[in-house]
Length: 180
Image (cartoon, rainbow, N blue to C red; front, side, top):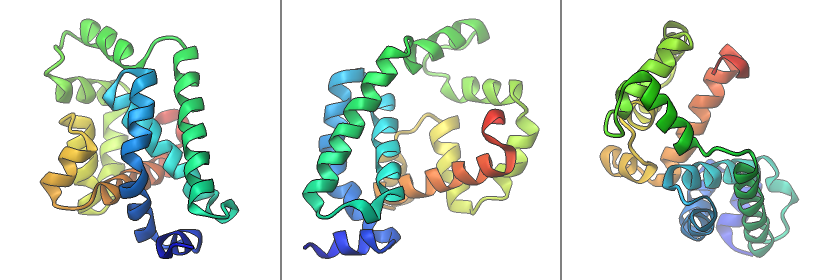
């Protein structure tokens, strides 16, 4: 059995980065074929990896884990399509309503947070580590992909992914899912 896989099963955070490096490209390609949106495909893959982390002790070997991830990504993509409008369609509608263009993602996300209680979200953002703050700002306010953030901050994509989701979980934990 591979070393990273044992470390992953035992809860080693660094093993998630190795899992990300090994499997994310194939999972992203699968998701892109279904949802046709880079951002949505990226998010679906990240959620699947988070789910795998939460169930890490249930996998017997890397092949079992990868097959589970593929099925999870495929099912999450199909669920996304069944729910109707994609996030891109939703954001396009919000852009029209708020009066921003596709290139003004920062303004749009700022407006969304303002509408939903920007002060509370910003207060929680300040409680995060500087790295997590930078990742959330680059992703949600500046519209950067995880790959771009990885290059900007000089950390692995797995590190960006892990910190992004831990930051979101921390904020959600303090605000509650309904407010975020």
